[in-house]
Image (cartoon, rainbow, N blue to C red; front, side):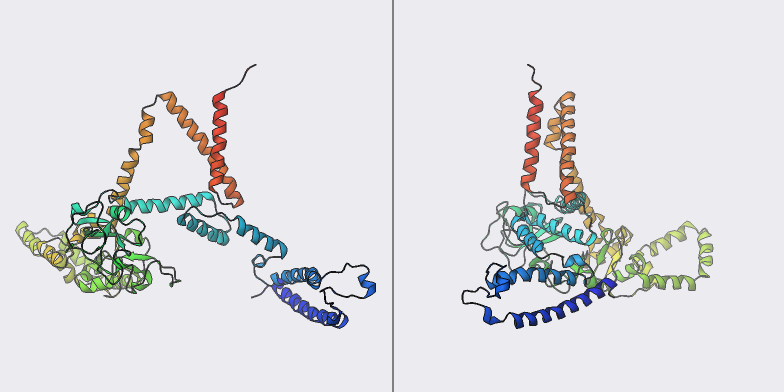
Length: 496
């Protein structure tokens, strides 16, 4: 729906075009093409040419064309919802574009350029952004990366450890491209043996042994641990090792997919699936939950019995449960009476032995759930699974014994990585050197650090206020000023 300004703008554009047509007709009638001389100048009537210098046709056209376009651009901008999207001036806009293209600073790396681009988009949407937001987002990305990578050894190949319980893995598209045998390498080998290669980040995988340099790598030998078996027979591979994910088998990020969607990992097959391909609604706080995809649920049918009682219930399932509770409103009184009755210990022990299997009790409860779509499980759900001997055998036969291990979760792995990171930060050599100084020296260093932090914050705030990008020359200039101040302070006052 156009407002009054937009409607008047279109009226002005229409009148402007009509007047332009009328003016062009008069110009070609009064000043015909016959007045254009062979040298390109315009032969005007003597009364007019006496007051004007002889100029080529293109010069006169420029003189009249710039104001003409300026007026048209102004009228056309009034027809837009946001006039600033068009602009009001022709020459200033052209000069600005040329200058900005020439003086645009290049980002230090791809990640910095990506962050700057994200912040520019956010500035255009929210109109307000601070440098603190950029630093906080960058710190959050570093924390997420350290949570995944700090749990793995970045200096030594993990092959001697055997099939590692959980570790960060990569697949090398340079050494094992699609069409060959799938292979995975550990974090240390991705740094040392596959530096500069095209790698697929696989996040974490369980019970995997590093393949770097084995038979699958015909032209590469592991630099960290050359002596390896030809193949690791217990490793499990999927299309993830060729850079494809989800049931749609597409890469991530997908250049052809314009839909913004999050990827969620199945805790059984460890494949990554788009939220829109799960067949169910994605609940809130999905970071604190685990997900089992529909394919794995149908492959291991007994998991549906647990899902009816332990899984995160959607709106439909909650409604069914509420109806079931209402229909059994008269039953609890009888059950409460039964619970209040004290039975003999021998009878109670026989019943406990018969009902020791939680899975059997859940199946007998008869609660049903819609057996379609992926299933989300709340935090701590693994501890509520049945661990009787029969269920342990069933889980082992299905290859799901890890579900009884709370330490197998990705959250436990990330917490381990954060603990290792904090432990490494606790042994900072700079802090160790600071401990060896006396109290006066420590106070001087602390005061100097606080002063530099305050001045650096004030220095960066000027760039944030003006919306400028901080370059390496700006940082170098800042520290040169700090160095000059330090020299002046060390030299002390002069007395005559």
